[in-house]
Length: 171
Image 1 (tube, rainbow, N blue to C red):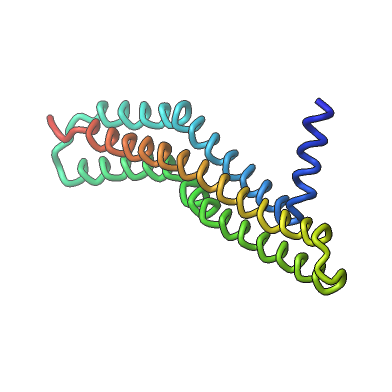
Image 2 (image 1 turned 90 degrees about the horizontal axis):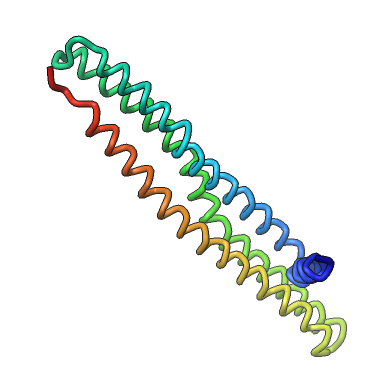
């Protein structure tokens, strides 16, 4: 266990301060993704059940008023199921930019090492790792978020379609 902690600590130190921002943004992104998965599988089911129960309990479903009530029920459920999806997309867009910020700060370290040590390879190596590790980390975090967001967006779209199809206008 100590070796794992030591490896993580040395990786974070080699990547520079920006790597902590990438780690924090990645943690927030995955926390929101897991929250959305949990919501869809628990609370959303209850919301759909309540809307269906209310709709099926209506004596008539053909008037303009009934149509507006149906639209309201669908909209309320869809707003809840789509909550935080834009935050996930924003974090996915932010992670590569944070990786590029790490690249820039790492290259600044390389240029400082060249200035003060006259191009000593050993002193430049720390700057090169601080330039490449955040870039790689930002891209890996982004790719994982894109995959999860694609799955989640298709699940949300399917749930929205289900709600639209289930509340029928007959009677």
